[in-house]
Image 1: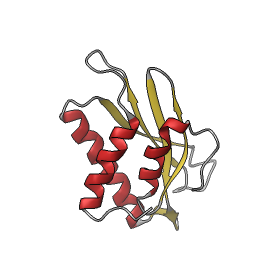
Image 2: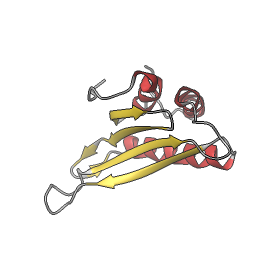
Image 3: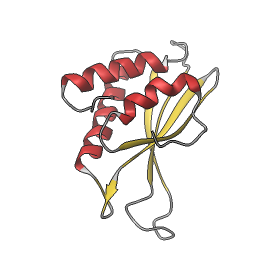
Image 4: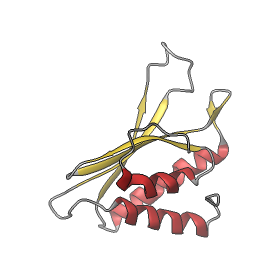
Length: 130
């Protein structure tokens, strides 16, 4: 896996799961006692995300929504971008998958989220074998 060295070991399973989506690359992640966050990007060709990578990001977004609606915890997917006028447009978007403790939940277990994400994605043929 191509990844920065700042990935917390407890997020390894989630990072592996995200990278099973074709075209998704984890760039780092952190964990503290209140929250975790994993940063990832979608593969880009000619300034546009690849179809496979975009399908992966879309599925992660759906899984986050479904997880929250089921009352399983406070998980979110945030998009960040570097200034396009300073960089080549189409290559500066990064995604942050994160969870935090809420009044009704302890911290969301990243490994449990990864296992659920993997199972649902495998059923739909969206992930590649590790």
